[in-house]
Length: 213
Image (cartoon, rainbow, N blue to C red):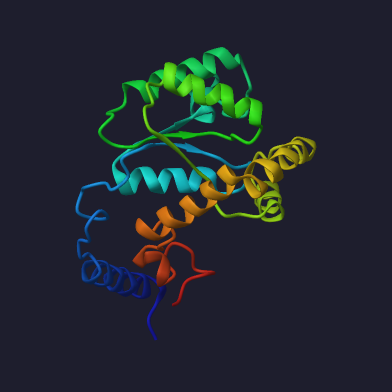
């Protein structure tokens, strides 16, 4: 019987072989050329998977992802500190404006309220130098987002989540733009294989509870 060290070594080799076997380049995906010629504004409540999708999309397209939480962490050392919203916005938009504009620039932030959405769109054009912008949203139910948020190390308070959920139902599920944002999220997830687990994860090295030994 193999000991733990031998099992891990063999599993790692299997992951490497599997990764090499599946490393075939596909147009617009692994070739280094992005098919996404727009800047992106993420939409979704906390726990919806917005940031995860934004990070994977940035990696897949070679783009730049930045959001208000990143700015808060840079300004105050903790992304949960609300701080001065004007400073937070300035750092966020300055960072995105300085990023290469030949690849997608992605604003990773909650955008659900219609009034907040309008001001954000204006600021992105003026301060972040966004030109053509599309809105992208994960296809996640409010119930699932609430559950995911509750499992975070520093979850958003329940009363705040409930406030988010009220406009989220109108902004994402019931409006034409919201439905298009979800549809676009599905398309980008499929195009760039954003839900694809790594070879190491598939055989259980990264997450033994979900992988296959």
